[in-house]
Image (cartoon, rainbow, N blue to C red):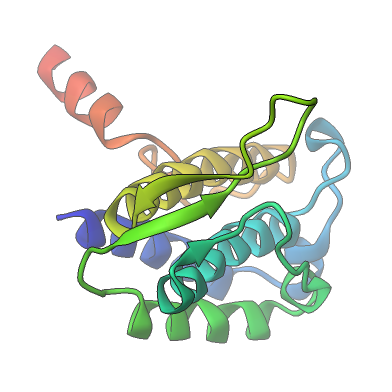
Length: 163
């Protein structure tokens, strides 16, 4: 189920990106601190890459991730990367270590997690950034996504009970 939810979010993002022009993808949004749809897409991709790459080495490191600005500025590259992620992200669960920020003297350099837990986190993280992308679409007056775009599954289910 967790991979289905993540796939649905990635498919919604892919569909959106396919509908956007380059200028729309890279347009700086005032209400998002001058971030772009491309910037939020890059961030979603990079955290997913951290989880997948971390699976291979047993250590997830979101803190020291590589920032690839090509994902932010090249919509086609971002689309290709999202499609590639979908091809490799479904893996069996396993125990992982996750690097955490070292703040102060009492910092813990890493904690235990699992791959499935990181997929759940990445799904919720993607939903959060899709909601921010929706703000960008509203600012640009683009009506290209449905009302549930960027909405948590629990919120969608709750809203359905109100009808």
